[in-house]
Length: 497
Image 1 (cartoon, rainbow, N blue to C red):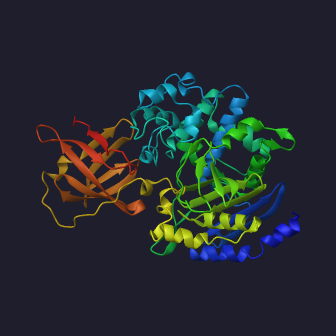
Image 2: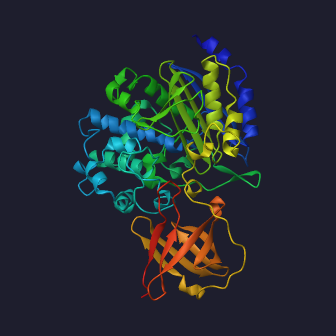
Image 3: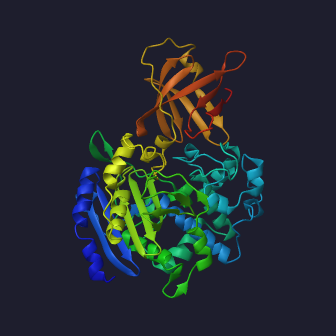
């Protein structure tokens, strides 16, 4: 196919993207389309700064969220090439103090297990979300986090394991994960705009602000700093750089005639390692698997390797079809947006010369529960890694109850060796809980229970206080996990001095 013909296949795409932005209340989106070594499209739509009406450009930086994971897997492949690391040698061989809750996982967990999400751990997101702990401290906390599945039994999407994998890569190179990515990938690929922190991003001249739909209006929200779990999702990039990244994948690890990662090791990251969940189970996407840092699906009979990403106010999708040498990148600055999916699938349909599937309508039905094809799309689409995906919402009893005990009896510090400290304090409006600097108003509902509001996420969960033999408050139970087989997290009250 020649360039002119490919361009003709994209006729009407601008109108489609604009219509999608309007339908899904998107603020801005950047779209790139690649065929082999040619860039067919790199274009911004909408705004990177809604208030100042600054438009998205191909150089606008976005947080790419979990599309970062493929970079972490690629650094591991690089270390395998250098004979510094082996896919199936236990992590404990390299990190002597490494420990998981499950003794079997402690002894046998490998970097392959970490990178294909089969550690047995559920998400445990509130261990790291908004936490001030260092990467090393978070790795040490893993030993206190209970699994809900047997080791290697099931695919369970995980951020902490990717954080630990990146930590291992940095330790083996005597530096940090960031330095390994910078020196082995960003620099040789010429990804000169990409950075690892939202602090660095905001020092650049062209970056997108994060937005969220609040009361029907797109509202700017704070950037979410996730440096400690960087290997799971902290990279910020733009179309110019991500085009090079996708071409590098299509070229099987080669850049400018030089093999940066061997074809053999990069092929492992592109190969199915575990059967995985998918929000798209249907005739177009009948099977879903996970490689190392990539999801590997069959899309309308064509092998598709891809990964989405999301963090507060941003969403992304990076996809390529290796046989057809097609690549698509979609970056967006709207919280929880499905635009990266509806746009990238439409582009692929056009380039495959297939009748486009109305993914917009399909996903709308999935999210509202109208479709019987699958569970709600938001269950397994890469969504912002915030409590909204991990916290159970319960009905609130609005009746006024007399407290079972003085309100100050609940106040104090409660700790969990993995989750850290949650502080309950009296405020002018009653009690307030604080975990990882996230403030949560509490409303008493009777029998030592409180309805607790996560203002940032618009959710309410139940806190249950427990007593000892002397009927004194001794612990706090919180349902911070939603995956099957998980128990509430128990925080033990620190005795008053």
